[in-house]
Image 1 (cartoon, rainbow, N blue to C red):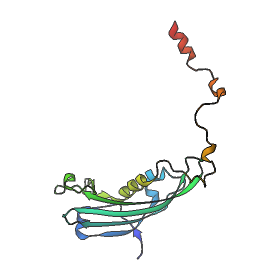
Image 2: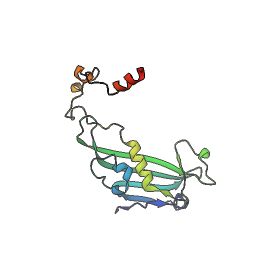
Image 3: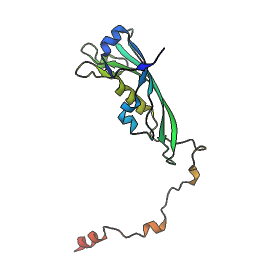
Image 4: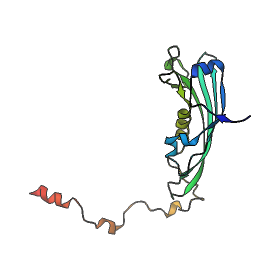
Length: 174
């Protein structure tokens, strides 16, 4: 099956009624917030999104997305390859379908003024949440070893600098 571009926004209620599925790509260059976390340009994201109605009659959006990105290691600063993948389940909030009536495993999502959801934004949010807060190489692969880092007391020569607020202290005494 050929992969196509996933549409930016869709009506989840109509799509769930038709049980639509998208197997395709989301252009990485369109995901600006995710791009800000990366060292190199984000490649296209592989995404699978399925719209369905569950046993309770709740319309749901189920999806899976994965991409391999290049981020900076927080320990050494060198680029590192990071595979990121996520699974998600959303249920649109409508007049008939309230957030309080949904099972706990469904994430409620608001519709925009046209009654649609932005699929690219959903995937971007989920990928960003899946990424580690502090990406680091494995200790063996990192060029800076954990035992070479210094913690604790500062070098005494660093403390010898004059306080820039000393002038203000003398004015306070007057």
